[in-house]
Image (cartoon, helix red, strand yellow):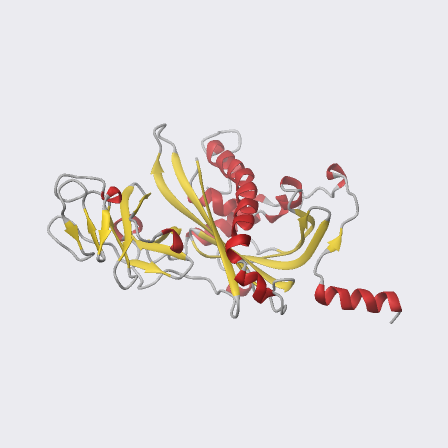
Length: 344
């Protein structure tokens, strides 16, 4: 091994970044021939046929603290709060007495107190009000709405595998005018990454994509991608896979390169229709980072400073990708592309 090669080898073990040469966006290899609509449509169809257990991710776990949190899922007004033992409670957001917004109430000794007349809700069933099953996985808060999905319920959400060992996470939430399947379809088109997001991705190559058809084994039902994450003039090359364990979730997992084992979970939660009658969907994305590098322990301790940076990057990416998903939704009724729509 030459001295230069040996230096590069040692540097790669301590410094994961590569200096990227100047490149022209329009000089990239076009990917439109590779991004087969039939492949995307089949992957989406298989995803939508999987069971959800009727669970919906609705918030970051750490966003529910000493005050109640109000939200809407699938047109249901909800309120969430924590009991004295930190247990997550979720129930209808309207007070059973006269309909007050319970998210404007107070939490006292683990009970939610309605601000209108002082009705106390401990999280247990009482006349006119019944809690929903809830789950807190330490990163995200979930609620089970059996009357919405109507599937066989499960005790826990369908959770993807997360990295072992030291890790840090950041959760980002944005809302778009689209349906959950449009968000999932966006992630099932990895070919658009370097074209649509040149500020984040370069040197993207789809190494494998699932076959067309409904009978595909789990090991083959994935997109395998080699990509370099761009940080200014520097890049971090990785190999990642995209899988969809349930209808409203798609997961990117790094298989090789810096941060092996790290995951990005994208959850698409329907909110209901907006004032214009069009559907709204919340994109709730959890970045769960891990590294075997000794210095990563310092990064974990600095998580409160790093998490906002991760959220800003995810927000920029999803502002663009929501425009993509919204376009899919808007075109769904168009006779011109009806036979090409991956959501059909």
